[in-house]
Image 1 (cartoon, protein in one colour):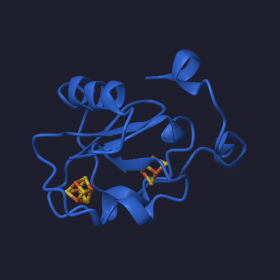
Image 2 (tube, helix red, strand yellow):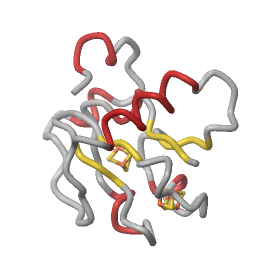
Image 3 (cartoon, helix red, strand yellow):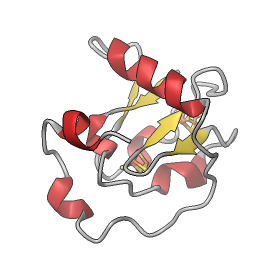
Length: 104
Ligand code: SF4
Ligand code: F3S
Protein backbone atom coordinates (compact mmCIF):
# COMPACT_ATOMS: atom_id res chain seq x y z
CA UNK A 1 0.00 0.00 0.00
CA UNK A 2 0.93 3.64 -0.23
CA UNK A 3 0.67 5.88 2.82
CA UNK A 4 0.25 9.61 3.42
CA UNK A 5 2.96 10.96 5.71
CA UNK A 6 3.69 14.01 7.84
CA UNK A 7 4.42 16.29 4.86
CA UNK A 8 0.68 16.38 4.12
CA UNK A 9 -0.19 17.98 7.46
CA UNK A 10 -1.41 21.55 6.99
CA UNK A 11 -0.55 21.43 3.26
CA UNK A 12 -3.42 19.23 2.15
CA UNK A 13 -3.21 19.99 -1.54
CA UNK A 14 -5.68 17.20 -2.42
CA UNK A 15 -4.30 16.64 -5.94
CA UNK A 16 -3.90 13.02 -4.89
CA UNK A 17 -7.61 12.27 -4.63
CA UNK A 18 -8.32 13.16 -8.25
CA UNK A 19 -6.11 10.43 -9.66
CA UNK A 20 -6.86 7.50 -7.36
CA UNK A 21 -8.70 4.81 -9.35
CA UNK A 22 -10.27 3.28 -6.24
CA UNK A 23 -11.11 6.47 -4.29
CA UNK A 24 -9.35 5.36 -1.13
CA UNK A 25 -8.43 8.74 0.38
CA UNK A 26 -10.02 9.89 3.64
CA UNK A 27 -10.03 13.41 5.00
CA UNK A 28 -9.13 14.77 8.41
CA UNK A 29 -8.97 18.42 9.38
CA UNK A 30 -5.27 18.84 8.57
CA UNK A 31 -4.31 15.84 6.46
CA UNK A 32 -5.56 12.97 4.36
CA UNK A 33 -4.92 9.25 4.79
CA UNK A 34 -5.09 6.24 2.49
CA UNK A 35 -7.07 3.13 3.43
CA UNK A 36 -4.40 0.42 3.22
CA UNK A 37 -6.88 -2.35 2.46
CA UNK A 38 -8.43 -0.42 -0.42
CA UNK A 39 -5.26 0.90 -2.05
CA UNK A 40 -4.29 -1.25 -5.04
CA UNK A 41 -0.67 -0.04 -5.06
CA UNK A 42 -0.92 1.58 -8.49
CA UNK A 43 1.40 4.41 -7.45
CA UNK A 44 -0.20 7.14 -9.57
CA UNK A 45 -0.85 9.41 -6.58
CA UNK A 46 2.77 9.57 -5.46
CA UNK A 47 4.09 12.03 -8.10
CA UNK A 48 0.90 14.12 -7.93
CA UNK A 49 1.57 15.38 -4.40
CA UNK A 50 3.33 18.78 -4.47
CA UNK A 51 4.47 18.21 -0.88
CA UNK A 52 5.95 14.78 -1.61
CA UNK A 53 3.86 13.32 1.20
CA UNK A 54 2.87 10.00 -0.37
CA UNK A 55 5.22 7.03 -0.04
CA UNK A 56 5.10 3.27 -0.58
CA UNK A 57 5.00 1.57 2.82
CA UNK A 58 7.95 -0.55 1.72
CA UNK A 59 10.20 2.44 2.44
CA UNK A 60 11.93 2.03 5.80
CA UNK A 61 10.60 3.83 8.86
CA UNK A 62 7.02 4.25 7.77
CA UNK A 63 5.45 1.80 10.24
CA UNK A 64 3.97 4.60 12.32
CA UNK A 65 2.41 6.18 9.25
CA UNK A 66 0.93 2.93 8.08
CA UNK A 67 -0.76 2.63 11.45
CA UNK A 68 -2.02 6.22 11.31
CA UNK A 69 -3.41 5.69 7.80
CA UNK A 70 -5.08 2.43 8.80
CA UNK A 71 -6.63 3.80 12.00
CA UNK A 72 -8.00 7.06 10.68
CA UNK A 73 -9.25 5.79 7.32
CA UNK A 74 -11.86 3.94 9.37
CA UNK A 75 -13.50 7.04 10.80
CA UNK A 76 -12.68 9.98 8.51
CA UNK A 77 -14.95 10.71 5.52
CA UNK A 78 -14.02 9.69 2.00
CA UNK A 79 -12.74 12.46 -0.30
CA UNK A 80 -12.72 12.13 -4.09
CA UNK A 81 -12.67 15.72 -5.36
CA UNK A 82 -9.89 18.25 -5.12
CA UNK A 83 -10.63 21.26 -2.95
CA UNK A 84 -8.78 24.50 -2.14
CA UNK A 85 -5.73 23.93 0.02
CA UNK A 86 -5.19 26.08 3.15
CA UNK A 87 -4.04 29.62 2.29
CA UNK A 88 -0.80 29.12 4.19
CA UNK A 89 -0.11 25.65 2.77
CA UNK A 90 3.18 26.71 1.18
CA UNK A 91 4.57 27.88 4.52
CA UNK A 92 4.03 24.43 6.03
CA UNK A 93 5.78 22.53 3.26
CA UNK A 94 8.68 20.50 4.56
CA UNK A 95 8.26 21.63 8.20
CA UNK A 96 9.09 19.04 10.84
CA UNK A 97 7.21 18.25 14.02
CA UNK A 98 3.81 18.82 12.48
CA UNK A 99 2.45 15.51 13.69
CA UNK A 100 2.80 16.30 17.39
CA UNK A 101 1.01 19.63 17.15
CA UNK A 102 -1.33 19.47 14.25
CA UNK A 103 -2.27 15.90 13.51
CA UNK A 104 -5.99 15.54 12.97
FE1 SF4 B 1 -4.99 5.25 -4.87
FE2 SF4 B 1 -3.11 4.12 -6.37
FE3 SF4 B 1 -2.45 5.99 -4.59
FE4 SF4 B 1 -3.22 3.59 -3.76
S1 SF4 B 1 -1.37 4.04 -4.92
S2 SF4 B 1 -3.91 5.54 -2.95
S3 SF4 B 1 -4.75 3.05 -5.31
S4 SF4 B 1 -3.73 6.26 -6.42
FE1 F3S C 1 -1.75 15.72 1.18
FE2 F3S C 1 -0.29 15.72 -0.98
FE3 F3S C 1 -2.68 14.77 -1.09
S1 F3S C 1 -0.35 17.32 0.54
S2 F3S C 1 -3.78 15.99 0.38
S3 F3S C 1 -1.06 13.94 0.11
S4 F3S C 1 -1.68 15.96 -2.66
